[in-house]
Image: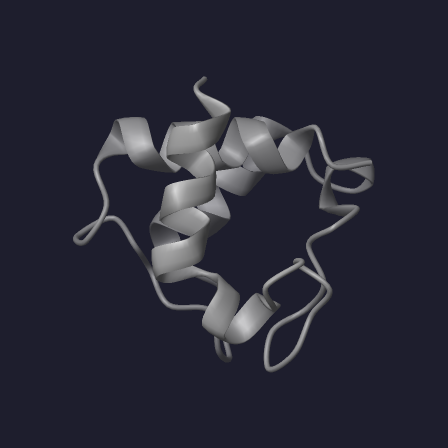
Length: 77
């Protein structure tokens, strides 16, 4: 995982809903999401989305980008 790569994806794809500090907004806070979900679970949520508001990113991000973000967020505890 490359943290800078994950942060770039978060900035371009996630902060609109989850906040620029991952504090939450239209979507839930992610600044401590690693305490609840591991990297595998986060990969699934990012890839497939989660109703009602989380879109699937499997068609707009590569598997590597999704894996980087999932591992990065899993460290947020």
